[in-house]
Length: 122
Image (cartoon, rainbow, N blue to C red; front, top):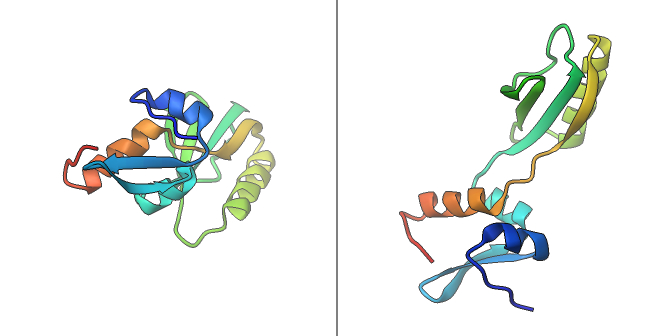
């Protein structure tokens, strides 16, 4: 089934594969995760604490109070990174509220596509 919309949040709600049209042709397609990787967007983990540990067990970017984003480096195993964050957080007195993989939204993917393809619009 084909669903076409400029309201990207609607597309995210119903599609498991995404295609970007350029010049009337499919320029690229795949799952959101596949497109994220092919566009060079980093894999990120989001960590939220109800009580932050005495020392953060990672280097990350603060987003809100007690909430951080961590970029998974190329070659690192995401599951191992998450496991280490959980273990080290608990050892340092932290109480995790939520931890998980950040899924980019289609707005981010489309913006990255435009940036990497010289401002081409589909």
